[in-house]
Length: 302
Image (cartoon, rainbow, N blue to C red; front, side, top):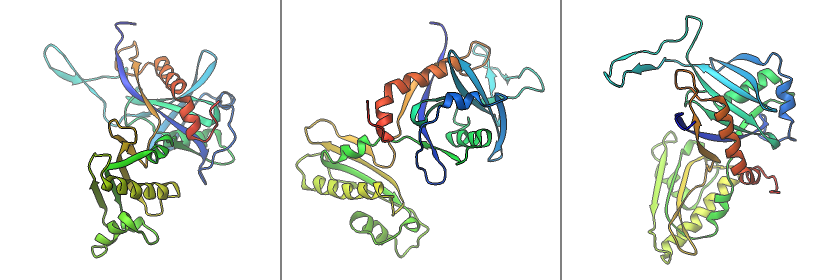
């Protein structure tokens, strides 16, 4: 295994929820759900792309592989001569694909790792499950976002830098503070613009500006948690820890729980991901992040 090549891939986590309202539902036994998919492969057209899914088994557990035809076939290069040539498939009936591997866990949590950005996404996963499983209430794969950093902001002494962005056309109601200033600044231009505000207060813990910027940021953080009525698209701040140390970047809109893992390349020719290694990467990431995943979806940590 020492001479096997690897690729760094990101493992992302989602929760299968109700598409209609985004609410969670009691955890399913996904091993039983996958076992009932007969035959084990199904292809559905989703957003004008043919997504093929296959249930496969490793050890005692079942997993899902989703693939889609790649728009352009990759090329190959000779390292010694730098000559380039097409990377041929095995025949006319073969096609180049991108793959995503999916593992299912308790509380309807799923982990995914993909061969490339053009591989089937979490939206394709939900669409494929809806078409294949045909649940009574349609599924949606909701990214699992850590709530820990949102709470961390209230523990800060101040904020040294904050960047916010929004489109006035997405805002509802009257805004005050920084948001009100942003909306007022472009009122005469029109609602179709996007305005971005960057406020630098400085890194000193004792500057009153950094404390006042923290107060403004906490108000905006509260609005984001209450449904984001002003359509804020970007909210990134550098928090100054109360007990000293380096500033901490906090993305108030997204703190998605992910983990980068090294995945082995398949033994056969080409550069596809090894399915066993891909699943191992997902399971290792889930094991490492389990408490954070459960806390993020409101499940008490055991």
